[in-house]
Length: 491
Image 1 (cartoon, rainbow, N blue to C red):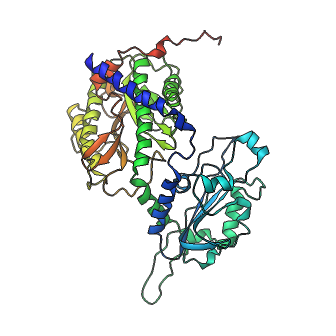
Image 2: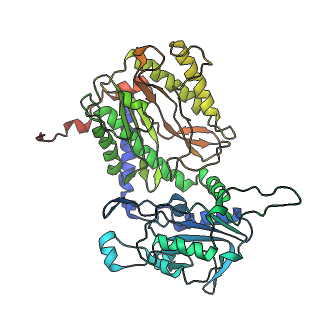
Image 3: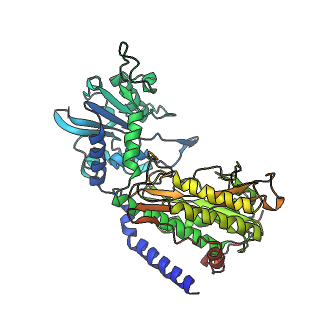
């Protein structure tokens, strides 16, 4: 009873803090222009002499006919600029470059303001907004990219990732298609030169390094983005807290007659209630055997069933930064003996893995620690023949960065302070597995988001109950959603 009271008190405090910050949700520059400029400066410091880094906005993706998907900016582009609109290109120079008579360190080309189009699709920032809100000294409309004299041939290195694919030609002289074509022409871009090449063969026949370099740029961006700033950590914490509250509310609301889709809806309602406008990735709600499908996204079972486990892997996206939290719960509120046995092994494996999240430790150490616990547990249950037996009951890794992407880029070498990473061991026993049939269809994954600090790991998603006993206790609590009813609809 005391534990339940404390949990409710903590959640009330967290939710109240979200309400206090709701007024900030309309601020498009949530990180501040100084953040994005600092990130550009950090990239510039890493770049080789006489080089330029080129970044394109994400394409607009067609959903069907004349309907597009909700636009999502390329994470690297947003990270370096703060710009959220399509049809844009960013150039970051190693040193000062003269653009239209003024020496600048970077330049952005953006969508032109257009009152008629803004009436349909919303306000555009325009060049004045890019200067005033994002802090760019040099900002131009996209159609000026063709005519402004930027000599790409003078650079020894052009750092550019693979160009965006599936870009539609809208016949607009300033759309992304046109910006890419202009860049190709100005830089004499050759797609074949992007491929990885040896730097040299022998002393007699050295191979010149390619002018266009994608691999180095990926390395630079991975290095920058894998360690978070304090501002980023604050946003990730919000996303994780909202996601953890969603998991708890779903525990209280779960019942055997609920559909997977309804369970997904409960999570996503919580996200939007507390200011997370989007999900960080397609929501996964898999009941019974569906939990054995690692990236199950259909969420189409009409009922989760009376005695199934329900695996729920979902994450709120808060101002661009995403969480990634998974809980596996019994649909009727009570684990069977077999379900509890598997669940508790995964929990102990996760605990062993989290303990490895220390500064300087290998990022592969948590997976090894979890695997050892899982093998021992499966052996003791008779599911595998020995602790060294090869099996596919844990077919995935346990550790990845989160941030602007649910699988954020990183170098995956050693843990460093201010990394935010997942710990997600699991056991999946599909039907037909080489073990006693009583284990078939059991799928368990527990995933938490861990902040690495110099004082040790901090579990950011602690508000979502994690042990089998705590989950059962949470599922006894009343959900406010149970009083929400709809009139019966005709089939």
